[in-house]
Length: 376
Image (cartoon, rainbow, N blue to C red; front, side, top):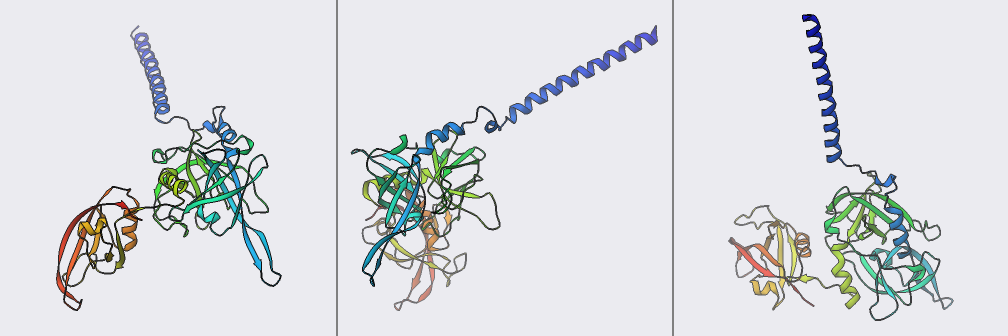
């Protein structure tokens, strides 16, 4: 009887342990699913990409560029194919039929004539409205109704992007003779605010969006889209040596104001301090007879924010808004991050010079503040 009771108790304990382990397994699975939701939506009927492509693809055009030539021997003029890329229909004209396309400046900068090939096969002539080589964007316009039922692509908020979310690219890779029109690639946002990624196409500092959605030559000027079908970037370059799967795009929020300026005025005017600077080579820290490296003020424009703040020739700017400035380009980059009316706080070293302009030793450390303005 005791053996029977003991055996029954052991069986009960084993059953309880099995039930408990099962409950724990269910709880662990539920917790894992809650923490790690499935990201394979692309492989299900919930995939948003086909609907996005149906809506957006008619608004991504193949941009063909041509150059005008003149042969003095035969005294004949001609127009020859130069190259091309992609462009996106982003805005209707307010004054009537027609609209505006955005592309990369490097796609159009060497051309004289521009044409758009739309998804329905229609070819329309384009006019170059203006460009900004600093951010590598250009705006073109067309007259009449947009072909193929194309509608402006809504511009999203690239500042709200998160690493890991869906990224879709639509464009036209290939050369002029062999274009893979309307190619769609997808991946994820791989990185944000990538600094120093350029191929000579930015004259000002631009932090780019990195994605693993594939692009090739001809994709420049196309559309980077989020899961809502909003345009959040402009594919502009890829690393083709050493790395694979690294595509970089211009954030659309970074250039929205530039788009407005180009459409309204044909160009972009950036806020400025009102100084010309050169790079000052020197030690990292200030020394009595050796000024530190930084942006040396070469000249100050009268009546500008820099003039009112008290900046003088030969001043060495070493910090701007808390960031170390070691060159003239560093200062340009700091200004480019600001908008009209923004305040800049500067750390400045002012050294003593004799009547002949030679450094006589000794310096002041100044902290100046100015408000950036648009200066024609």
